[in-house]
Length: 254
Image 1: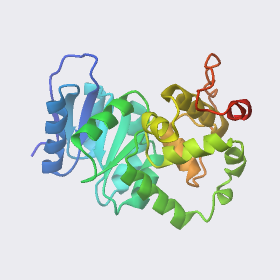
Image 2: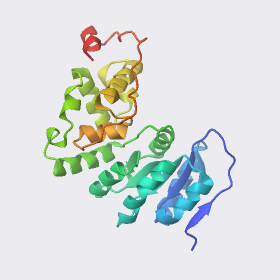
Image 3: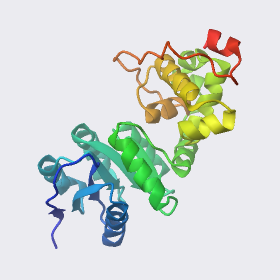
């Protein structure tokens, strides 16, 4: 049985995806869903993460969808190197909370749980990951939360209290929704704000927490000792007027 397969595919604007999963049915199911969307280019598949490294170099995918195998040791060791070659979208089971946490620390950008996502969410996750934006399904956020609660006694105990205390009341509210896996659009609808206002708050949150991805922000929020980014934090837009539904004092103190 061949461990890897590559497909000839012309480059285009669609995200280029490599699928890595030991389970043939799961692997081909994911590929079928992606191809049906006609908005994703599947450039190859692999059974194991080890042989997939060479395939990644040859096929240059934007995103590698990685099914977290059991045992996960080889995958967790290889993820940091893989994440330097392309963005990583993790597929895992709900009972792999510890492995999910380690994989996110090791470079995975996004995560979905098996049997807990739709075809639409899979495409959304791939598109977001390709753009460098983390996508964590509600189930994935829950799994990470369970692990953090079991291993970290409190937020303050993870050397992140000062960064959290820098957030305004509104930013704390927005961050809570981010940690639950909500998109900016969903947060805007829930808080009766414009999506542009939510994006402004998210930029400020990233700057104050000194992170650059949603996954890092969520990990820090849930208690992980995330190392502050050494890159310059994104500056929030200065040309946005306060949202009609946003109290002026929130903007002045954010």
